[in-house]
Image 1 (cartoon, rainbow, N blue to C red):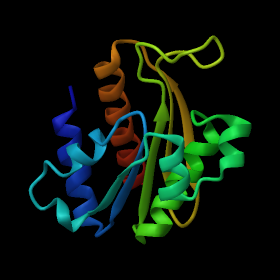
Image 2 (cartoon, rainbow, N blue to C red):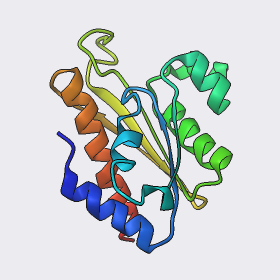
Image 3 (cartoon, one colour):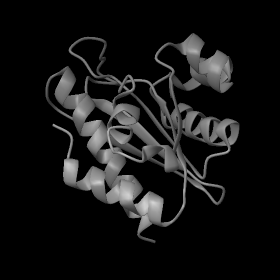
Image 4 (spheres, one colour):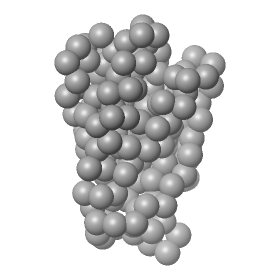
Length: 159
């Protein structure tokens, strides 16, 4: 379940600070964009959302290099960083957010298990990427990822 109170706080803070956000989502499949745009007045802060689920979409829509994906895998710190920076730069938003991971129930390996997610938050000053290992079913992993993005945005906005 998406944390509606946190969503309200993040949305209000984005409006108050007159900041815009764009999302590049893989494992969350647009859930973050959906959540952010459920708030009335979200057009003040939400610039765009890109669902770049496949490697081809990451390459075509976000210019993530094929070499980077081959070297590190689509579920990696490097790809999450590239996605967040690309969506921010292409959209001219103040903040770019990305998610890439393995929601499950299949697709995991010993090295990259189900529930592994990388989240990146990018601004013109820097890009922070964090690694998470969630447990639960597919929907729970997507919702936990979305809520974690909201917490990371909240943390960024409060600085």
